[in-house]
Amino acid sequence: MSLWTSSELAKATGGTASAEFEVTGVAFDSREIQPGDLFIAMRGEATDGHLFIDRAMAAGAAGVICEQPVDHPHVLVADSAAALTALGHAARARTGATVIGVTGSAGKTSTKEALFHALDRMAPGAVHRSVKSYNNHVGVPLSLARMPRDARFGVFEMGMNHAGELAELTRIVRPHIAMITTIAPAHIGNFSNGEEGIADAKAEIFQGLEPGGTAIVPHNNRHYPRLYAAAQTCAHVIRRFGSQPDSETRLIDAIRAPEGGSLVTAEI
Figure: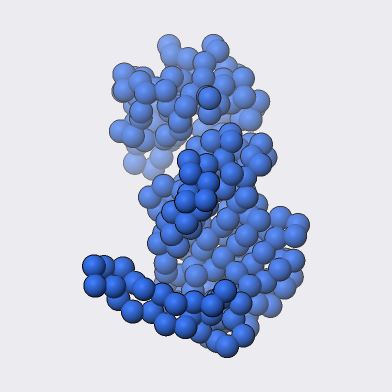
């Protein structure tokens, strides 16, 4: 099953396809191209992806999104970065998957990976997640654009350095479930009101929740009341995790396992 056809790419991005083609993956780094991929040639501060189109095609790319005509199958657009964002929106619009968004000052990638492996045991091969730590304005739409048509679950990591960034990302992801792992003084220099500003910025993830959506908040964190109040304005259901007696998911005990990892006892 193809991931995208050239006509779907053109419709999603508002571009013009030079020929009919199908792709099975998406990348914007020519070094990551696999046979059948779509290469998105984007202009950056350090270099211009258009300089690497021939390299991408030699590596097996099936087509290109670009801002100037080339002698390869391509979709011509006015702005490749905007086209990637539009492709992320289109991927989200067409999926029937349950979508989970994860953010927090620490533990985002670990939580995303744990969710992926847990869900994959229930629905083998039908769970999609962000690769690496692709959690910014480029990585999030790329991760969405890579989501298979028939995925049953999608798990997406979202990060931020400044207020307003997560609000933008979560409205692309539109999660059914939005989770904050913890609040800590990461990037605190970008916030005049300290950790409170970080908590508010992380809570922006709830703004993109789908109707009837669920918010998951860290009950033990000192900013819990602030996060809970933000969740109340957007979420239909709020679930708390921690060691508090009234946490819906309550940690009872955790010890290091002899062969690595942890042995956890929890009440759910």
